[in-house]
Image 1 (tube, rainbow, N blue to C red):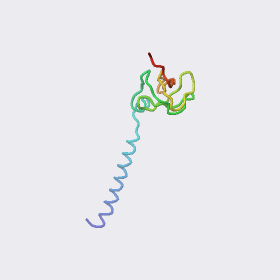
Image 2: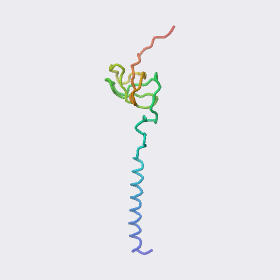
Image 3: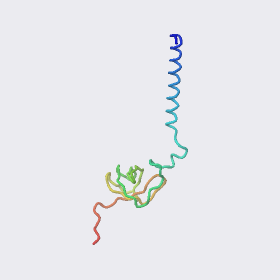
Image 4: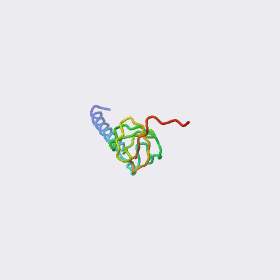
Amino acid sequence: MTTDQVIPAAVVAVVLILIIVGVVRVAGRRRGRNEDAFGAGGTSKVPLGAYGVAKTTLGPSGVVLVVGEQWTARSDGGTEIASGARVRVVGQDGLTLIVVAEPVGRPTEG
């Protein structure tokens, strides 16, 4: 291969690499048809009664960690729930969980 052939071949190779990188990046950003219908882990429902932790203050809306995923949540009745408080799911409105604060110390049955 002569010098006159190496330079055009290198230019073609660089252009092809840039095209391939661009296609891969676009494909990686593509969203699924129904992706907005599901939560972070691919599920759209959380079982009622599931427990979690408030990641932000719910006043009345915020973020909770339930079943290993972060969810948008609002407190039942609009009460404020402090960050770090234990919460229980009592309902769901679309992808927003409705939660209540759990008491810190539960009485023991005896």
